[in-house]
Every structure is written in structure tokens, then in C-alpha cells.
Length: 453
Image (cartoon, rainbow, N blue to C red; front, side):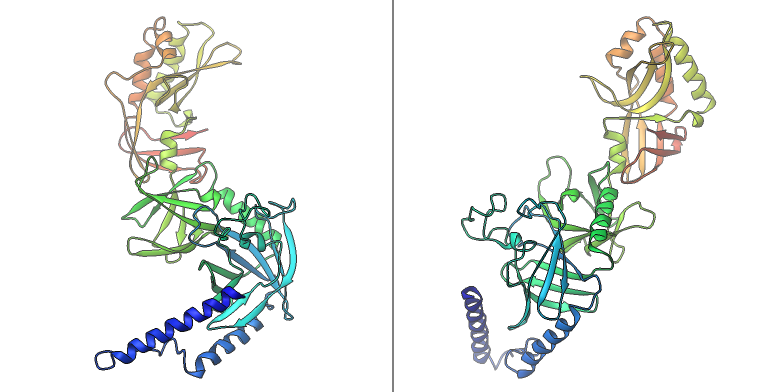
């Protein structure tokens, strides 16, 4: 209560100072109180009217509200939290959640707890959760959240979480609030489903967005940056993935449709805060469609450590002939060997590098395999466009070099197979967030082909 009282004194002092300054300059300027009418009684009446309307709104939704909760901006390492609230008209509230900082063995488990709330008539309407609640209080406590509840933080800030919220604006579907002490934006939005179902749907969206790929482009089609950390709820934005000069971070929460950041940000002239998964599931799109979050699937296809296999049903006649010739040639190394597949990926062992991967059966029973590598370079031209190239004397790994000592034409045949792929391609993955293959459509040289896992 002392903190609240002191805050009020400071605010009134600020207003008085501003007013006296205005009186001193009446001949050259004027004070504008039309928007924040501190002195006219209509201001207090507006606050009271807002309280009445919000108090009527809070108990109405059958499934209550989702509280998209963020801690203060001075704490950079905490994610956003999806909490849930069901208000009763008699000042009782049920809060729920499954966040990782729940205590008494409930971390990560769905938990509900009843407590009290009130609507305060201050300079602005304030929604206050003014008694202990197992869901909210751990985020507000002035303790080290990792050593709770016994270790106080030096400055008493804890996670910089708030339990009193100034109501900034509202409508029938959402209430935008600001933490009274630490200033983080917190949003109440009408929940359209059972709380456990909401949590499950958010987890499903997280699984979709944060599948195989964990880095993303954020782009407005003329400017692009990289995003990482989406899965952990603390998104980091940088100009490059490796050794960035600067990394800005934003807390976020998952929604059943995508993600929402703690506050508005911008890329170029376009603002963004909330993204939804596009209907074709190729990207996330912001409110006005001008900013997209696109998984770095093209870099994944080029740099990942696994192998994507060329679908032989899309081989040209020349590729089919080369495949059979390589399979026959390797028998000169060992009569039980044959060629199983040709793929793009990364070679094995100490000399691993991106290139063309040849997988050989090493027995007639086809129960064991070995891989050999030939250098082949994939380069990202732009999003969705990749160029494949090769040097005149491509490097080979030890396996292919060893095989080539007996199967003397095999390196030449492998080089010819690589040569059929040299060109520029429009590339479309079969899944943008978790690709297990892609279609390479040649538009300058090369041969259209499909990669599969």
C-alpha cells in the first residue's frame, strides 16, 4: 500500500509541476488537458464508468479469459505466459495455468486456484489481483524464481511481474492492460474453448511452428532479419544467425493460431505484434499481411547433417543410365556391392561436407550399407531459389577414394551424375516447417528432381 500511495503522490506532483509550467508560458503556448482531463470531474466519471463496464464484462465469457501475461521489460530472460481467468461478479476469480514456475510440485502441470480481485478507482481504472494465488503470485514474488520461495532478490524485483494492471483500452473481446509497477503489457482475450483444450491447441501450434527447423526469416519482402528462440517463448532477432552484431529479444506466447509478442515491434515501415499461421502453412503472417515469419527451410535443405535421397522415379534417361553404371562399377571393388541411392546432404566422418552422397549396399543380402561423398555445392540465391554447382576437380571423401582404386571409373561416373544436377532451381519443400523432402524445378540448366527422406 505504501508503494501505491507514493506513486499517487508522485503523479500528482508531476501534474502540478506541468500545470505551473503552463501558467508561466501562457503568452507563447497553451496547456492541453482535453485528452487527459485531470481536473474536470468528467475524468473521474469516465474512470468510474469504465470500471462499471469492465466489471460487467469480466464474468460474461462462458470460458473466461486467456491472460497473455508478460513480466517487466527490464528482465530479458523470461518468456510470456498463458494464464486463464474466470471472474465472478462477487470479486472471486479462478486462475489457471501450467507454467514452469508453479510451486509445490506443480511446475508444468495444469493447476487452478481461487483468489480475489477488485477494480480500483485510481487515476485510471486498475484491475487488482490482491490476494495470494498459486498461478499468479510466483510471477510477482520479490524472490529469485529459481530458488523460490526462500531467496529474496537483491532489489526485490523478482521477475518484475505485476498483479495490479492499469486498463488501457477494452472492447467486448479483449482488455489491454499495463502492469502498474513494471509496465509490461498484459492482454485479456475472451477464451473460445475449454482451458485444457486451449493449452493443447497451443502445444499443437508450437509443434507445427517449431518442428525440425528452429530458425526463421522475418521479412517484409524488401528487408529481412533472422529469428531464433521461438520454441522457448523468448524470440531473438538478429541480422545473421552466426555471430550476430546485435540481438534484440521479445517475449512471446503461443496462441491456437500462431504467436503473439509482448509489444509492438517493426520491420521497416511495417508494425507487427501477432502472427497467424497462413492457410497454406508456408509461413506466419502478421495482422495486416505485410510481415511474414518464414522458416529457414532452404538453409536447412543445404546445411542439415542428414541425407535427402533423389527420387529415382524422376530420373532422366541419362541419370538412370549413370545410376546403373555406378552400381555395376562398384562391383569391381567388391562383387557383393551395389548402389542403393544417390542423395544430397552431408558426408560422414572427419571430412564431412555438403555434397552428393552415394549409399551402397555392401552385401548381396542388402542388409548393410556404406556411404561415399563427392563435393557438390548448393547456394541460396534468394528465398525459394537454389543454385547447384561443382568445381572441375571435386573433392571426394576417403570412402570414394578407396573404392576408386579398384573401381577406376567410379569417380568419373559420380562426377557425371553430379553434372546432371548443376543449374538453378525453384525449390518448394513438402513441409515448410519440418521438411522431409522438396521439389527442385530447374529453370536454368540442371534436371528437375524430387528429394525425399
